[in-house]
Image (cartoon, rainbow, N blue to C red):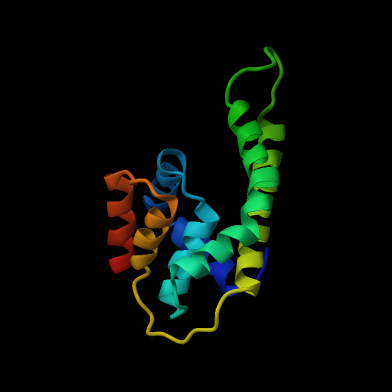
Length: 155
C-alpha cells in the first residue's frame, strides 16, 4: 500500500502473534486509538521524543478523521457480524468495509508520519509510549494486553 516506515512498522508489529488482540483490547476496553498507539510506539523505537504535548498534537491531528471516518466504518463492519439481512450473504460487503477501514487507518498513520518529530533521542523499546498514552486517556488499561505489548516490545 505504501512505503513509509511508520506504515511498514505498524503492519509488521500488529501482525505479530498476540499484538492485534492486545491492541484491540486496549481500544475496546481502554479507549485507545490503535493507529495512535502504534505511532507512539514507533516514535519511541525510532528515537522521536515523546511527551504530553507531542501526544496531544498527534491526537488533535487525527481525531476528526477517526471520529468521522474510522469509527463509523468500524461500527458498520462490526454490526455486520450479525445476520441483519436473513437469507443474504453480506460477507463480501463486510470485507470491502474492512478494507476501507484499514485504508482510513493507513491515512491516519500517514498524517502522523508527515508530522513526526525528527529523531533526536536514543531509541527505546517503545514501552514508555504505553504509559504516556494511558496517562493521556486518564483511565487505567487492562493489564493483560499491556503485558503482551510490553513483552513484545522488549523482544
